[in-house]
Length: 155
Image 1: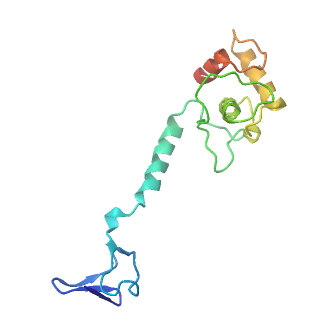
Image 2: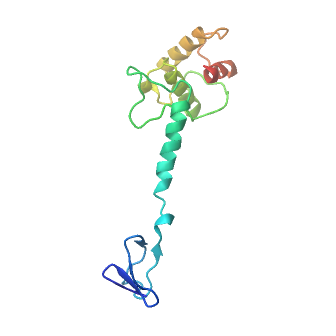
Image 3: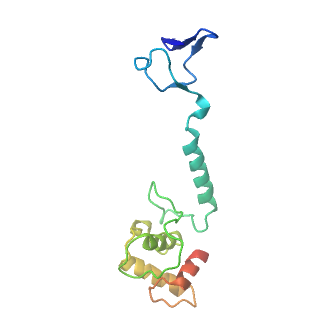
């Protein structure tokens, strides 16, 4: 088999066009054999499928709808997937638990999206206290413990 101007010459079957496949080796490296990848083996459908699954998840996520006053920034997602536990989260902490609290509060419109930064500061503390006050029997103490986590997951 040899390649001449975009056509593979096969002694058994005749000329085969290269258009439906991708050449993965150069002619100079392998003058008599060119390895080809058939079109059905390309990974182009993977990202499209992932985007479709994400879009479906966003459409069905509770509290994921955002109005024009509290829309997530471009390129971000209103789906909160930083942390799924119920560990105590308090003022001054940083990390995934704080990001989860902030994202859930932003989805429920207690915190603006620009405040979702993974740092439990004054804005997050005030948002947690407002959420707790709106969801009795929670005590508006600003501590995100098991009961507040449970209320956030259910809200």
